[in-house]
Amino acid sequence: MSAVSKDAKRVTTHVIQKMKDEGEKISMLTAYDYSMARIIDSAGIDVILVGDSASNVMAGHETTLPITLDQMIYHASSVVRAINRSLIVVDLPFGTYQGNSKKALASAIRIMKESGAHAVKLEGGQSVKGSIQRILSAGVPVMGHLGLIPQSIYKFGTYTVRAKKDAEAEQLITDAKMLEEIGCFGIVLEKIPADLAEQVSKEIKIPTIGIGAGGGCDGQVLVSHDLFGITKDFNPRFLRRYMNLFDDMQAAVKSYIKDVKSKDFPNDKEQY
Ligand code: KIV
Image (cartoon, rainbow, N blue to C red; front, top):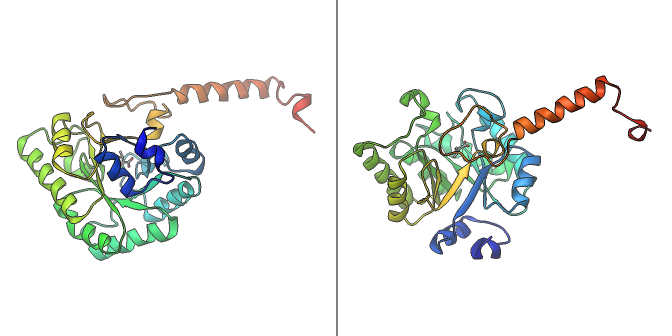
């Protein structure tokens, strides 16, 4: 850990702003349950995202759309019970903030009150400005999310790289500046060209956290199940796998089955 994060007993929105100001990269990973969050927090991660990717990796849905507010609160509460140091950001799920700022505030307040998390994240720019402003007015920190926004998958029709064309890139820059101006404490930039992400990161003062957006962002985020290799069939170019837990865990289960079938387990020392 380098200077800013080393000095911080707890990571807050102010700490991650200081990291950007002092040029220290911000590390962020997803977690959805107590045991995984304990491992990730104890390793010294700066930010834990209770992402709505739980809909995919925990529940097996094809998209992030089905996960509910109650389910996100359940995941977030489990993560909160595990952490000592990380900043915990929770995704507002699809349908709980778009087009209705009062509903957005009520959803954010439920997350903060019922889970004990520290901030919320939501997807989109101009179209969700009113929702973000109302949430911020209650003192709830908000992280934005631009570029590939998976809750709008049926509008875009594909998970391919966003903002390659000038018009979309310009809109993204405008949205990023707007999110900064209204008071978001950070922005996730997902799957956009590295040059564009670097430009945005230089032009705004709040931290950008990239996923598939290159090294010019102020921090990086990955879905922890991808990093650990628990997911197997998801292999985008931006993903670096640090383990192949799917194979390792499957091998362990096969050994266990073999030991049970052969009556090797339990042995004399493994019983009362
Ligand atoms: O839900 C999630 O995991 C996310 C990350 C991909 C940034 O939003």
